[in-house]
Length: 254
Ligand code: NAP
Image (tube, rainbow, N blue to C red; front, top):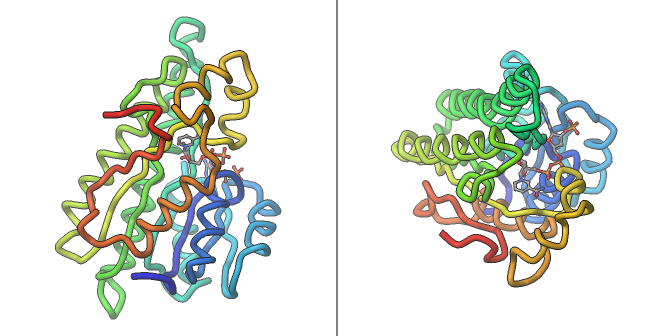
């Protein structure tokens, strides 16, 4: 598809999502910068993007009605959507041997709703839009930001690992279902990235051990994941559909 695409990037008010929005705009796309709550942060990201015609949309992806509003507002703002980048996510500690039952259940519910069910609803809404537009669905793309944790395991964030394994499996299933429509679906599985989400781990007692997991002896910067996502969302050949691409600095080989 190349530049010129209209892209909704969920959770692009900071971190990896903001880097994705920046890279997509540089590639010539028009971007909806989306935040869960922080409109001001999303507006700052949008204002710094290269090119014109970008927009801001705010809404909690755990609410199915809000998902519908987020997609509708994105379509209205850009005059249609071609690409959905499923990036918004949460990562919260819920160690099974140190949390009560109510806390455990809350963490699972919140994590699955944000990282898996919300993305599933957004994907349905994008596909519904693609199928109903006059030019047809061809050229549409769905790119999910998964995680190395799906393969490696997450001892204190089991729901996170499960949600990302589910997100990978959903994306691969969409690749099968959407190929006849000319739509690509693929995912990226990053290892640790220097963002707010990873800060407490990277600045805590395990920080050095985490950095040592990679032979580069560091974690990723957001743009190192964003550039992979941007390739999948724009120039990657259709034949990469169904892939889950590792972007983990060789910290975990499978
Ligand atoms: P981050 O800095 O914590 O940013 C999270 C983004 O998601 C924010 O824009 C936030 O918006 C949005 N968000 C959170 N909950 C939401 C909700 N319920 N509804 C709508 N938006 C919501 O995260 P990040 O590190 O950039 O991570 C981005 C993605 O990469 C996530 O899917 C994460 O799992 C994945 N990942 C991260 C790492 C890492 O080490 N950082 C590693 C592997 C994979 P508000 O601030 O407005 O709520």
